[in-house]
Image (cartoon, rainbow over the protein chains, first blue to last red):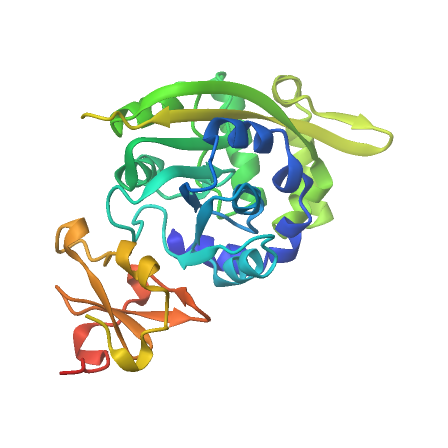
Length: 250
Length: 73
């Protein structure tokens, strides 16, 4: 799956660099609030993509290492960084850092691409210093199993690198299994332009029409606030932002 | 620990936190050293290229010991 994800993202730098939800979506200020970095903090941003989260953390004076499987994404992240940061090409499920290396680990809008989210969260916890925080923001699967299944299909048709979204219960469960204690937890909604969302992962207008037909089913439309606004097809992803602390003593 | 001819491949403080991702040995045992244009595990001998200053730590792209640059004496 790492190979598929890497290949998928190597060609998508421009699309992600222009993505409003990644650049400035409502999860970014929450991640920054929960991370609460000081200028001397060492931070790892996992699945950094085009680096919006890493950049914001570096702007606050943190020492940031940006991790991703895609070299083009990392080169873009480093080239556009407002402050120096280090880039690291690696898989989230096998973080190439020694234990207890970071004060904060962030992962924003990337977890749903990881082959094994539990493994990735375990790795984030491993590299965290005692007292440090993991902050995760990601789209969250709806509670209704049928709606969740429909949205999973829509996501995987649109983007073959999509693996799965965690449910509301899975976020704290996986963090707890990694030995972390939930310290802050918030939900928000990330408004999306549907056609731009499909195009960002290489989908055609025909694919967009077919996916919109499924998105317009009343239960799915209600869960994702799918609607047409001034001719633009729009929806909103529920996003979970959750922070968990590594205890000072195990 | 490092090949002195290429000690500036990546900063020393960056090298100090990196580890080999070979699951055949414990995660924190895989200390790396600079050998030519690579980071080589002092335990298993697998090496990782550094491309444009970016360590490539993907296990699928690691260089087996028999194919990596011989270490300096």
